[in-house]
Length: 273
Image 1 (cartoon, rainbow, N blue to C red):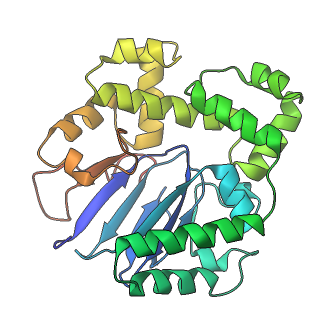
Image 2: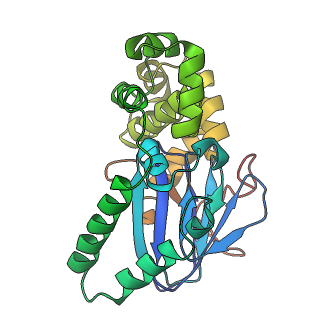
């Protein structure tokens, strides 16, 4: 990157660990004060965020199944939902451990070497971490497989828990309750279908929304813009150039820098801040 960039990031069904190599990123979510950090952990979210950098940003972003993040860091994920934090400040992380890893990654001469070190470290941390519930892992996999379409009572029955038990364990190890997690996954699928050219009515039916208005309301709450605004912005000159966080997904929009024109700007819409 050689110029400042602002990017809207929509919620996805994953936790995020960004290991920065020397430049910081500023993240604003839900009207809160911005967080400027070099390395970042963000648990599962139901609200959009705006990420900004000054034109130079290098590092590795790791997308984790939420239960895998719980295993790595040992922190109840409900404490981190819809938040952006310095990973070294997580209560069960040894001080400086993540910064040391980021520095070691940045010092290596090739991406192949960096990915090799990262794989080794994450496997070691995982083995020494908190084991997730096999039922949570299974329930999460089923939610992902169905795009959030499976009813929560059926999901609880499938794993042998009551709805209340499922809710409690999901909040601990996923960060969101199963209903909220299902909404995120449904909207994630809807964004993908809209970006591929599907109409709103067809997308609403395919993703389990009551109607187009139901889709539009959920879309606005989680992305800060309407389905039409999101789709048009991605078709414009600055949309797909954002570099989506998941291959084949529609996760991001480039926003106009303050005082500039020519790209989308939803920074004043509800939920974005």
